[in-house]
Image 1 (tube, helix red, strand yellow):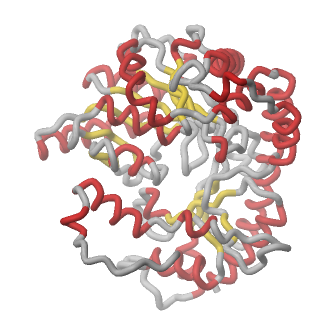
Image 2 (tube, rainbow, N blue to C red):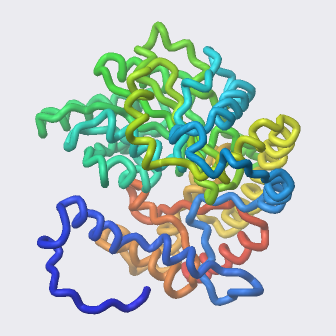
Length: 442
């Protein structure tokens, strides 16, 4: 961080309440500081090794070779092109790709798609357009941490976390807890619950929702006239779990593949997808809102989409990638194979060291593991119920061993000591990370 002159301006005088909230949140956000000092075995051996950020680096070389061979801008790319909702060519390419891979019940048309500079912008748009300040959106625990800021910071909506207790968050029985949370919030605040935020495949649990759970959730949304926002950014990052042999695995089913007519007003259903995860391209900043039955949403987006305009370079690159069936088929298959291998490699280390983990994942990049339990085994005098227990382990990992894992508390963990570890990296990276983690627990 650079140095600044001392200002006489008091926070309350110089910032709006929204700005003050951003200052408070920004003071706690260390992610960007971490990635500015990332470990590399040759160029930055003293840096921070990240297995906390959901980045997939397994096929970067393959993707870069394709991009470098197929990047070609035209004069049109130096203009506003076809507008801020994505070029015609890009929306054609996305609809073509989605129709091939998501098995939609109703063919996805380019007019159903709003392109944004990443799915965070897409989520913020939907929160801004569907919820008034103070109104609620349900989010099951645990959850992807950044959903909180995406949904609340600028839209000023209220995330209502849904505690699961001892229930599996992905089972049909968990849906009654959503209804309880909605009733409690509305009685307590007098405000409405307007939407449910879903992540399928689930982040951080790395599993796909069974059909029965989604059906119950659709019916609940219809009964309460709530929007269902389905973030499917890990849709094609499913793979074969070679270790947890006794588990039952659910295959991924996009909400686009459902016949919704008997379950919910289709205008309440919105699907998100992007290239950050399935194509390991966080930096290209490309996301999509697919809403097939809500014309007013697309009309409203003509205003707000200016603030999520994709760069012409990313627009052209992604159009080229998604239009090339041979390349995308090869890439998806290879990515799934490598994710399975990396998961297997990480899990062998975890099991060898008797670290508790949540079994049965077959999607995404992450393993949900209980480092707190292992820490207690090595430090029998410690107490996990005391405030700061999880923070103590997190700080030891980050500041003493320079390894970054995602803090379970920030991800809505209801029990202390749980963390999310990302395995979508080369095996050398995972070996180094686990060596540091194990050292920190001693």
